[in-house]
Amino acid sequence: MSKSSTIRHDHAGRERSGSLGSVKAPNREGVSPDLDRLIHERIRLGIVSALAVNRSLTFNELKALLKTTDGNLSVHARRLEEADYIVCTKSFDGRLPKTEYRLTAAGRKALERYLNHMEALIRATREG
Image (cartoon, rainbow, N blue to C red; front, side, top):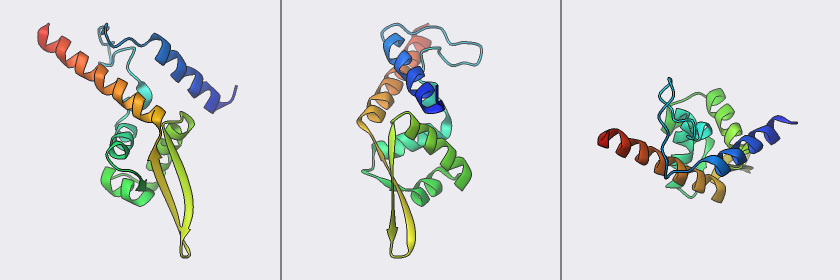
């Protein structure tokens, strides 16, 4: 099984099993087992969040916004691409290469599920 099909398979499993209505107790790392760990990582959450409020962003815009390195952004963006959360378009602006990212419908739904889950955790913590 290829790496990208493994990621898609894992993501599909989360979609089937993850119910936001019932929040499980966080594990010893402080992260609920049903939480989308792909989005939960800081840089990936930043990418998805930034793209949720912008039609698209270039590689350099994301890099500056997230204050990260080329390599770090590239690795995290690739993981999100493999999960079909974002799409990458490469083109040229004159002679300069331009890489642009856009959030997919699946990425928007995943972010919405993630935010709902986090809100449920916050409510459960405050009520408990």
